[in-house]
Length: 114
Length: 111
Image 1 (tube, each protein chain N blue to C red):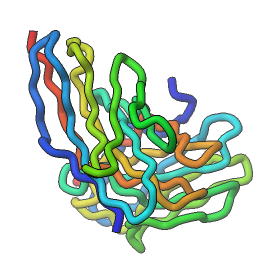
Image 2: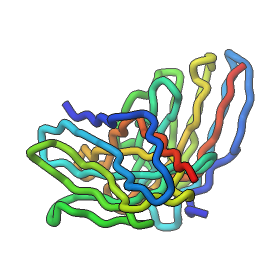
Image 3: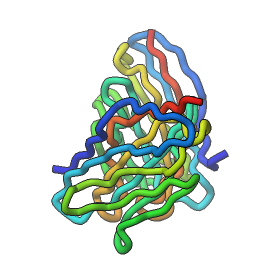
Image 4: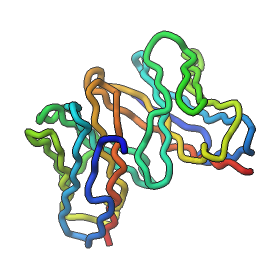
């Protein structure tokens, strides 16, 4: 069965520090993986996605994620946190082929301290 | 503005009532997806339509139904509402699989 687990419902970092948000997945087929960001009172915005090919994926706003098949992980990182990065982040697993459906993790709320 | 329009933004209604949420997809997008976001369940896929036809069903209750019209806008109908139906309801549209654009959601409060 397909599933997504995000470790840590709340992560707090200082401005300028490394951001690391963890995501592990379970999939019986090669996965499509996504990270979305949700700012308060807004919809979800795609940060980056992995489908096939290069395992290190670069996204918007300086974020990147690495697909590690052996660890079934797709952790999101950013070298230096900015106050504007404070938001909720969701990891998602694509399934259903051409239907294009997503299973979301529970989300990780990122706080950035000045 | 993502290009996906959801109305209304907020809705407060009483238990037992019926409401309709509306979604206008991005121009050219044939697929519409509905998701429910609640504190306890997180983001749950409800249903997908493609060019007017139901394509996939997720954890959608029998009290809920949806349709997509010829102009591609979609409506999600929620009936016999319960307190537990209070949530954010998102619509997303896409032209390619997984190429989602999300609307800003409708916040439903059932009192």
